[in-house]
Image (cartoon, rainbow, N blue to C red):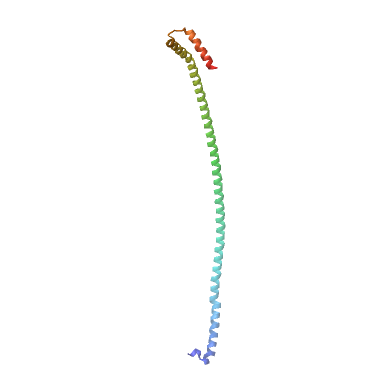
Amino acid sequence: MPQLNPEYFTPQLVWLAITFVILYFAMARMALPRISSVLEDRKQRIQGDLEKAERLKAEADEVLAGYNKALADARAQAQAELQKTVAAISAEAARREQAFAATLEQRSAEAEERIAATKAAAMADLRTIATDVADAVIAKLSDQKLPPAQIEAAVDAAMGDRNR
């Protein structure tokens, strides 16, 4: 192999140096500035994207805070409406309960009056019934007829003892 022959080392090293210098200047003058500008553009684009992402995140945080505030306000308003409605329902229930109690009290008073009237009528009829029964019993037991005034006096005396 000729490249491993020691007599060709010097020309090969010279050409290697010449080629290296040419390639170095070609890379330094043409390729590296382009690569550098591409890298710089990429860096700026990434930086811009990061700034935009931070700005959007801040906006999203503001929107979220506004949403949470609106949600809390809506909950508070709903709670206030609920309390107002509960109070109104309680007031209505109390009003109806009072009206019902008044109606029951009125019916109870009317019933007591009817009972008292019925009791008074029954007590009035009781004297007559007791007199008739006493007359019938005396007639059956003794075959005698007593005067109605005497029977009434005996019934009145018996009823007077009972009422004490």
